[in-house]
Length: 616
Image 1 (tube, rainbow, N blue to C red):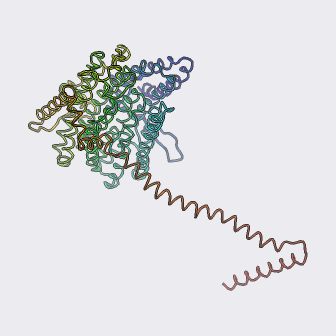
Image 2 (cartoon, rainbow, N blue to C red; image 1 turned 90 degrees about the horizontal axis):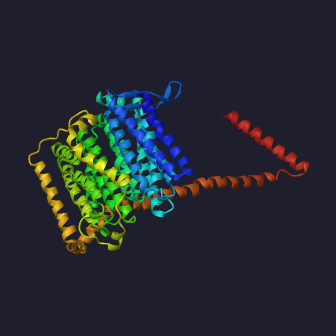
Image 3 (cartoon, helix red, strand yellow; image 1 turned 30 degrees about the vertical axis):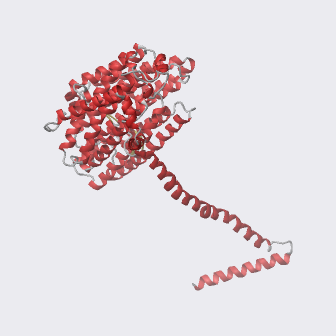
């Protein structure tokens, strides 16, 4: 079993190197290497899953210095296995899909090498036994995401998007690094299981645990694109759609939720779950409302990712590990499906992303439209699709918890029902009605079934059939069933509101698009549209704060101090030395009388110094 785990850790890195080297000989060899490696990783994970009986605990050390040592262990339990299945399974389907999507790109060796490195980082992260190995996998993914988002770095927008992702996530990572140091100082251990046990036993000061929990959560909202560190998530759409599916569905954005779930007992003992739920509720509302007005396919899905990951955070924050993690699993499947489906549409539509130029594409992409409909129904929360069960449980849990039943539960409910509105709008504008760009429509061709459609159909089937096994998934991933509090009328109320929103969207975006355009032209609606379209201007305020406060005040003050104090002191040393030299130069002449006089003055000064010293 240990050999399988080590192979899981090493194979992605070796595969990345091979994909790059072999791809230089023949670009298609890069794909086949990535296809083989990603499939092998999924098979190895299935082997671990089938043979799992108890947690696999491998204690190792990075290096030791006397009694001091840095741990670097591996821990595989049920939570890790589920995350591994997501990373390797969706990673394989993503690579398979990229066969056609990236076929014309001249830099395929670099692409597939980065993708395998990215998957390897996620495997290390979810297999970590301690904070050091977790942080290493965390940073591997951060670097890989920067490289993938800015994959087309010769263009300005992708290059800027990569830098934005790097800076926003690095800001959060600073707090994770600080949390590691504080934890080691307080507990003398970085073992994740030991930290949970010590928290349950009350062996750590509660106030200090709260500080550490908040620091870790700041890192989590950076990686998972939550308020206020979400702007990078929207700009990440500049990368290839296959990258978006990996980042927003299978791997990186899930890591923030995973670290909170892994330290769930620590958060409970620290009484920090309310912070998780509060930020999750704000993020869910911002994401859901902003998704309502976006023009680009991928931007809608990006804000949707922000909103639905927030729902998972709310589930954890409301005290239900089962609801939060089950929704994370469901979201990974249907969001990867929707992103790759969007990629198929974009690829077939000459890489146009604007939904207002689509319409009627269901006639040419029947299987794509059906697969994306399955993903949309799951995201909306329609039974028997998987998303319904976990989303319903999160809303019910937030309403039943005394700490979250007020504003947090209200924002959660709104975000939950608005999911149906923005995803219906996306589907209807793309696949229903009449085409709005006839020239573009004529260019659209049906995609390859094996390379493009088949992965989507597999994920569509999963998001349907997983709905019948939600209790089993919840029990496996959290150790507890998906028991939601009974709230009379919630089930029918949710479905009624969702159905009504779907009908409204269908009427205004398919039947009477002219009325929609007239309403949107009204001054008030234009103002609301601008606010939502720009994500409540959060990115603008962040940039303003950094530019005017950080750079304009602190940085300029530091610059002034550097020039007028530090540099002045250094440059003043030169001036002082020259003045001393000029004065001393006068006593060094070619005359013996001058030299003798200088020596006499020196002796007198020395004697005076000795005399004064003796008196003191």
